[in-house]
Length: 365
Ligand SMILES: Cc1ncc(COP(=O)(O)O)c(C=O)c1O
Figure: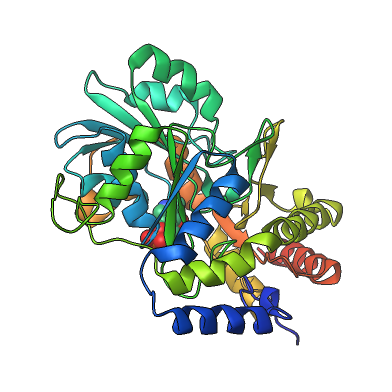
């Protein structure tokens, strides 16, 4: 039996080895391992790709979010709205700034926040809202913008899963006041270790983020802020420079696979994450809703198809961050989601095989 993995991070790299090896050699020969010209070059190439004035390379996507929140003006004791149905780091990063996280609900169809769920979580002390583009689908930032203008909070995009996704033709990372990305190896644009970046059009946010990532100093003599040691390594930057020109083609492969799922009749057996008009997902994960995802994934496993539910315990019910609140959309998404195999190189016949396996798992349920 052939097996179809949930994702395939290695096959993208076929053919790129000589360029990756050359990038490693270049950095080793340069002796510049932290920040330096490779990081500056990647920052400007990534800013151009996203469509922002500034990009600031940092150690990982979690630090990117903490630094972005602080650079956007969040102070200890402020309220920051974060969806509960996301990776734990989206909230953890806010908590480590000293802010109080107020969890908001998601729409179980898009699995993203909405203007209504955010509005319900706002308080007089809300200074930022973290809009997570979950599974590669942009959150409705333009709708949040109206609220932000009325209520005076900053929109921080958590675009960790959404490099290259667009809403109204604007790329994730250029929609909010500031945005953060992760290049964790399994992400659509994955480095060879931990790495992250912050994008913004706001020169003050950019300058503060640059200070915060480097102990609050520009020269290691005068420290004007208490910051972090969270800089992008030159090696990761040099390798990411090799990968960045390919991201649109890889995302295109994922989008074709999503189309193949639709054409193979996935909707008869499961409900795919709803992509609203005007949005383009980059399908970091291809996620559907089903009854009994645990039973279905066990049945798929027997047929050689790997599937996994994400964030089954939402953040407001995690032991470290528990809050007594009622988030019905979150509970539904947590209880029903199932990610099916997705990668830039998954073939149409593999997608059809996944849908056949799902059909027989459903019939047996
Ligand atoms: C939505 C989301 N936010 C934040 C992060 C944190 O990124 P990192 O692992 O690079 O710290 C991740 C990924 O791990 C993520 O998926």
